[in-house]
Image 1 (cartoon, rainbow, N blue to C red):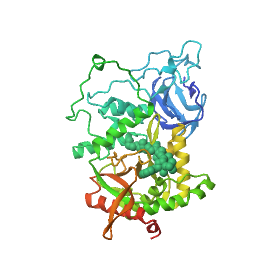
Image 2: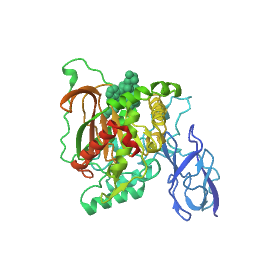
Image 3: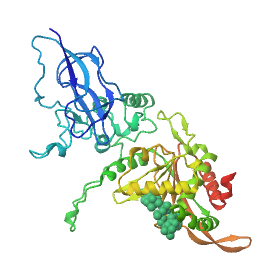
Image 4: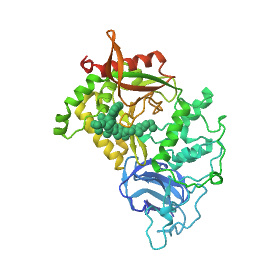
Length: 446
Ligand code: CAO
């Protein structure tokens, strides 16, 4: 006799009102106990909710975008057969092959409530220890890629290293379609899509391990979470983007006089106006003048996506590592507004209070080391952006003008760009224009 049972979200630890990001079954599907039903995503983790019973899905009670907590009904399941249990005992079966290792929090000592769900209740995606078939997969980057367990499973079956796949889902999550598109691009073009990295082991000889302790005292210091995340990103950009760096300098003598003249007003407004606010404003003007710089390569590598908004990422140095908050719509903001945004964002970055939204949507990045020192450097493009501006310390230089040397305050600029998208002449035009705007801010009005 058929028995319809409500399948509910089990104990998911401290989480509540968690987003449903994937529904993995449809009405009419025949499912087995432990099959995954939905994927949930909180700020901290992504997890799959498995079914407690076998049967046929009669009706779904959730959809993508809903928020659920422990006890929310996921679906109605028709359990056929005599004596189908009303309330089955908690799952005691050994975890399936895909089951990730429990997180340290899940291994809390007896008596202490684990901070994350019990591994048999939901499956946490942040730890992914299942074997990755091809030996050359970059394990760290694959593990850190943002994808649900179902998509990870799919990628593993196809031998796809997720670190090379660009996610088109919310918060950059990799969807099943992204994996399919990646495989298609590789099959058709013989190469990975434009946004994809060179596969690990692509002729790159590994650096042999060295026993440093043989030569003196050593200390092992684990990388911070930010370093673990930014490392694979930088590596991916470095391997994928053919970089060229264009150097230039801007005469900011007048800009600095103007900036200093605004100091009192800035203090009244509670804002510190540093050269960076001017650089952001001037960069927006240069991006408008040369739209190719405000673009990204389409994932298929056959088109440019030109952005009509002007959001600028700013590399901020924190004790935990490098983060890149984004100042939004800088073309529409005054210098004081940009400076205020910068102040708030860099403080948030240093207090580790940045939200994902604070770090998304950047079109172009500025890495300013001017407050620290240096004369030039070669920043790494923050792919899929196509250019990044490095700024070093300004200094007084003798400049030949009207038959004599005059002291001028010169600001060194280092523009790295993706040579697949931008050629040298365009890059030189961009820095020349940027430097002209910084030298004479009236150009911002043109
Ligand atoms: N030349 C000379 N002086 C400069 C300058 C430049 N290009 N840029 C800034 N300064 C001065 C400022 O005017 C300020 O001087 P005062 O205190 O006398 O007014 C001082 O340097 C410090 O500036 P700041 O660092 O507080 O402010 P900022 O707006 O220039 O930068 C921020 C803000 C968040 C970008 C910066 O603090 C930071 O983190 N920089 C590091 C960026 C980084 O690590 N990038 C990564 C590189 S790639 O791995």
